[in-house]
Image (cartoon, rainbow, N blue to C red; front, side):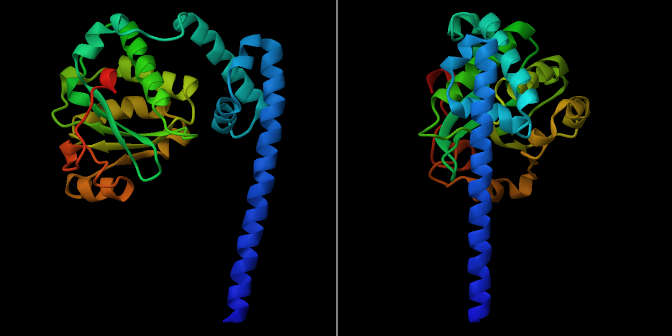
Length: 252
């Protein structure tokens, strides 16, 4: 028994040492990447190390790939969001759909976002992209402490062909993956109709491997139990028999 306990302690110590070494390597690469991107674009000095680290992690700590992605992001941000933020007056049609809500935190302290897919209608794709940026910026601004990720519930109840918008889905996916990497913690897709799988097959090849691992299709019979594994009932949206009312993203 004593040998077993000693063995467990040794393994824990080894894991702790490996984690410390990994963190040191990561921190070193953050410093190197910061120097590189600041030399290319001085506006990089305005971002914190957490953002640099997210881009690094999105590219498996490959400094060159992460730097290229980050510099593209800075250029995109300066062009697409020249005023620093998207105003509600720029996305009136998307807000009118009343399809995105935010309320509560999961057990890891990550904000919970709920999207109702059946309320989405094909619209001007540029306005949709502005809405995606508006939504992601709002989510990020509401993250507590040093939390960096959010959890999303995509509810497809009532989803039909009129809601299918492959072009819009791909535009939103591109912004999430390329401009807000390592922000999504987990995506629950619930109340999935068979029709949706046609759209899913068109979008799936464009989802990167890291994002794919965060996606969970939930069966109706296990919906509540699955959500409760990650979200306490006191924080679960009332639409799933929880205790918190949903708040529209513009009011969150």
